Structures are given as structure tokens and as C-alpha cells.
Image 1 (cartoon, rainbow, N blue to C red):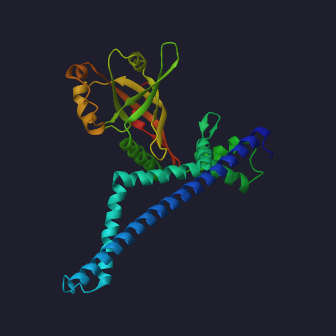
Image 2: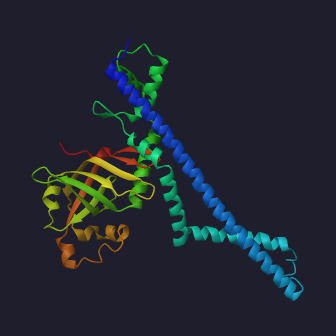
Image 3: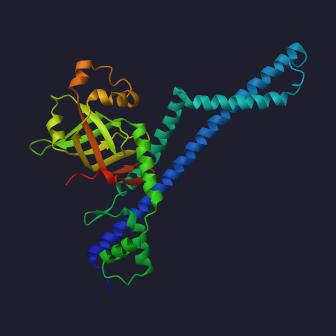
Length: 320
């Protein structure tokens, strides 16, 4: 049976999507190798320099006093080994310092620039919609099915239906998405919350958020006179976290917002722990007036150059 021209065009797009994803994965692997090699070279350089300095210093001291300072340490090679250990430890400490992080961040920026073409092309195709459904997880199996049985299906819908019916959802994939979501909320506290005003015009605002003990539920606060208040009270929103250094974001358009039953004083400790200095500019009167909202995420997508994982919070379904 022949597939329709429309189906064939979609299949061509699916193949293009897989091609760009393979290029993106190769680029990410190359970046990881270059990043690891760069750090190893720096670590080796620091280790060698410190070892040589310690070895030469020890040799100089021996020459000055004419005998080893410690009787059992009558071996220049031992001085080099100890110097190498000290150098490696100093290198690891330097990587954690501000200057070391700047050097590594600069290398990451150069790698992102070098591989930006493949990374951006791959991210463009991370999601794939067909008849309003996001089917990126089905595409590899669907293409394999079509190549294995090229004449058995009369439509792409039939292929996707079979893939859905035989698909096994590994629980580890869901757990991975949740882990990535949690790690990203630990890495950032700034989100863009988008709502609509009374005329249906979009409105977006940067806001500081804190996570709660409930998965997929955040707190945000606002002054009562802020124009965002009536928009929040409509209950619907979309969000996008500010990208991290490796381009990772959380995005969702399945978000509902409602006033929390708690006052600001009851959640102030969340802000003290997660958003340092947030309360510094707020007087006690400001805190008493602040309105607290719950941002309840039904589902989200966690994506970066390296991954693109959906996250579902089944307990956060919007009330019907």
C-alpha cells in the first residue's frame, strides 16, 4: 500500500529530525571530549610545574645543607612525587576558585560557539508535532517500522498507532526527567511567567520563585498593587526558566496559578534558603502586604543541548 504525499512529506521531516539529532549528539560528545581534555591538560600542567618547583627546591635545600632534611627522604624522586600530589590538589582547588571557573566557563563559551550550528539545529528539532501531538519519542521506532515493512501500512497514522500500542515506557525515563527538573530548580531561581491581560494581550515578567515540599509546585510573590495580580487571579500561565550556562531550561504551558493559603511570613524561610538577600530590601510592612501565589505545574519539558525530557506531575491536575 502506498502512503499519501502528505504522509511522505511528514516522514521526510521525521528523517531530517533524526539526522539533526544525531549531529547534535555528536557535537555534544565532541564538546565533552574537548572539555575533559582541556581540564586534564590544565591539571597536568599545574601538577608538572608544582612538582618541578618542589623538586628543585628540595635539591637546592639539600645542596645548601649538604644532607637531607629528613633522613629517610634521601631521594629526589620522592620530592617530585610529593610535589606532583601537591600540584594535583592545588589544581583541583584552583578549578573551584573564581579564576578557575572563569577559565572553564570561557572554554565552554568557545565550544558553544564552535558547535553552535549543530546545537541550534538539533534543538530546533527536539520536539516534533503531528496532528497536535508531540511524537518525538515515537519517531525512531516509527521509521524503523516503515523501513522494515515498507508496504504494509496505508498511512502514517496506522504506523504511529502500532508504535503506541507496542511501546514500553521505561520508568527510568520518567525518573530521569524528574531528576533533571529538580537539578535545574536547584541551579536557578529566576523564571519568566507569562499571562494575558483583560484584553487577551500577552504579558511576561521575570520573577523569583522558590520550590516547595510538593513536587512541581512553586511559590512566587507580588505586591497587591502590581498589574500582574489580576492576571494571576485568572489562573492560567506559561513559564520558562532563565537558561543556565549549558542552555538548560524548564518550560511549560500547562500551569495554573492560585493564591496560596499562606502569608509571606510563613514562606519567608524558603526565600531565605533559596534566594539569598531577597528579603533585604523588604520592610516588615512590605512582607505583610505581599501576596503569595502557588505556581502549579501539570507537566513541563526540561531541555538543554544534551537532553530533552518531559516531566509529568500527575497530582497537579487543574481542577475541572
